[in-house]
Image (cartoon, rainbow, N blue to C red; front, side, top):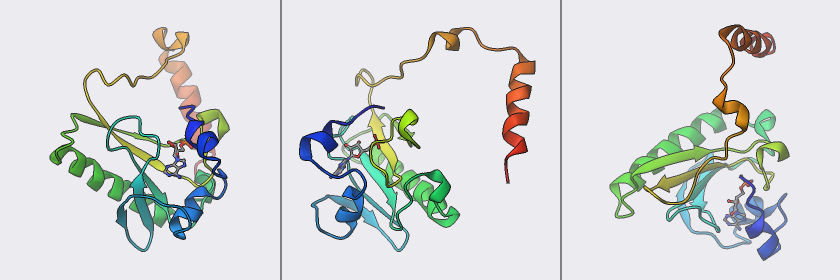
Length: 153
Ligand code: AMP
């Protein structure tokens, strides 16, 4: 997701914008708040109802995120997703999206989980690389699996 427009358009500092929101220095529409996480409306929604769930303690990227904050982010995102479906927004489906690092499309360096409603024909989609259409053999998957397992703590 390369969505730099809101940050560029409004001149927010991508390193501090969410801390400013948490501190009440910038306006936001809050959906939820507890001692660990806060959820508010994305200023540039992909679809109507697009929400961001963030840890109250700043973690720029995944390696800085404390597990209890990550757990709570997912639980709250799930609650919000169910509310989106039950609400008059009448969300037909839901996507969660989290960008960790520039290569993944992260533009604001305070980790956030996107939760956004999906509707048939809403125009959102993934641009998949050509390689996707020629899936690898199982031995290649095994090799990649081993690489990941080796560095998992
Ligand atoms: P990402 O590209 O995954 O880092 O997403 C950053 C998100 O933050 C984008 O969807 C922006 O629209 C959103 N955003 C940036 N500034 C604000 C703001 N002041 N209030 C709400 N959402 C914001």
